[in-house]
Image (tube, rainbow, N blue to C red; front, top):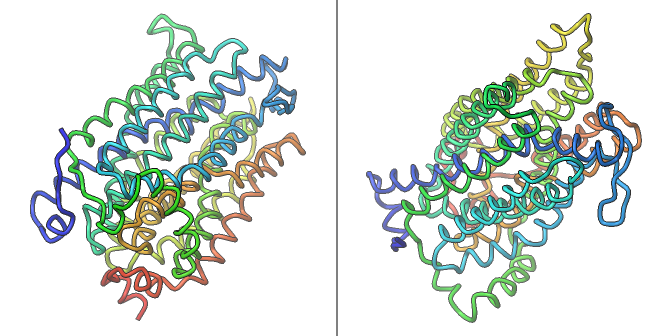
Length: 470
């Protein structure tokens, strides 16, 4: 089903074909978002803590600080999910740039995207077999799925540059994120019913959680077939066709790192993104754990909050995309970082739900969810499109390999979160420590000259950003 297309012809065509390719591209956001919402954000953390807590001997207690053995080290069961995410991200940090260099020289970016997605969904399916006190197979499945998801996104993001012009980039990226929020939210809504009413299906709560975790793997694999069959293949640039593909992948990686100093604004944005995205991913990844373990928020409310965030973020992504078309993507990202800082500080002071006082903590928790939804869509979608303007044509895979090493997962943030919980036995100081990452991200973004960076990369400056900078 693979068919070839010329990038220049597509970008010069303002008509139906280019829009159809952009719509086909959106479907992979729809597919993979199920893994991030159902597994990484909603269910994996609490379920892993329950299973690992049983193995550690603290079943039924909150904030489990008893340990399990992970690779020869004693790890608090309550801090296991963020530590596993840290391990996955460290692996990704070394793997994804090499994958990106491979993608740049591949004959089929969409095949790379789909293959990594299907392998990742197979890893995610392993989590289904995590039960009783057998947490290890879930750890393997989760880490493998996170790494493979990152590999698939390298190819997916590289395709964005093939199917959209600089002027379109913010809008196309925002529509993709918005479509992803809908996909992730729809499956989570279904799983919401299964987890809260397992008796309707003749199963217990443990089996309900396992089936929902498995559903995300099936959803991810199944909907990936749509972009795989509908997207066209775009050839690599002529300058990237010498030597074996494996030699070029590893060799070009080192050449890219060596010459990256020619793009100082690109490197400055990567530094900013490393920190503020670490903060975003840590907040998203630990939200359900923080709500359940520290605030005693009922499971029904946690699910409702996550669903609300998913569907409201759809509108946030669209709004920020339209704002960026008029004013450029730099300012919305910069202001969004400060929005995240406010959210984290407010979350630290949320009261704990008690038998005598449940309503106020729940209302405040949902209010924080509204704020997260407003800034999440904008900062994530526009970061992707803004970075695409800062990279030289023909090296999208390599640079998005570096970008994806910190895009969906975080290692510094989750590592600090795990360390603070281990030292204090509380998730509040762990959450508060994440403010540092947003502050550093904002500092680097403040020093960044967006127009200069885009021009240094050889790309056209979108009209809105040029106007905002003048």
